[in-house]
Image 1 (cartoon, rainbow, N blue to C red):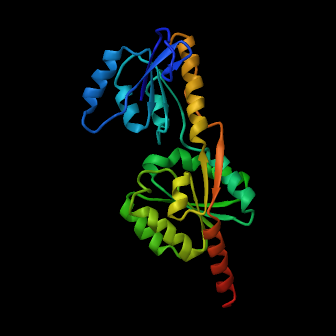
Image 2 (tube, one colour):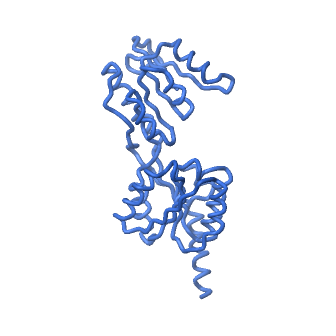
Image 3 (cartoon, one colour):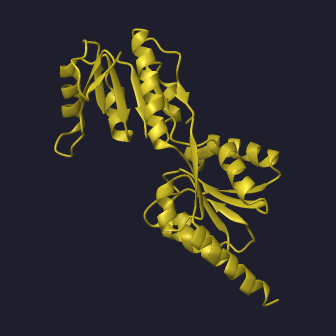
Length: 264
């Protein structure tokens, strides 16, 4: 989290144009009330919130413009305040499916478990995107992480890929390995939204470029400061998208498919 004020900068790494930056690293030793009071003491003109906890603390401070980055599920916050701007962590579903379709044009069937209470809007957009690309999207509502495990272990129908979307009900420490096992057992490519899941077995990831997200948020913040806190921004989609491949896993899936086909 960073607190910006409009005092003239004195130079150095914590100066951005004419605005000083005070960086606050949230520690476990202080509760949220402590950090809110600390921010108030700095009398900031603006807050740049990095991460979910930083944004939660910032939103309880009234009348201070906020720009956020690296916050999953931030869409619904923008319906409650006109002082919040930010860069979405989520890649639009159409972009993800377009990237997947371009790389793997043979994929026609995709399975998507999701939580109705969290991801309805995402799923609606995903269905629209799939229709445009002539992909069959099978969406399965899930109410708990335990239900995810049961579902993944019992699914028997053919699918070309399974989509692990940014949904906190779907994604837990227990369910992520289950997605990998499903991918291997069903010879289905695991599509996800972050590079880090490539290490746990995803075959293909489409994610926002986090470094460019920082630049985008900084540009927004400076523009708002120039306008004395007035903003016409809301939640912006990430400008730069990156794709990642797990080549070794994809080769393994291809080998499994060939061996299985030879049995029939």
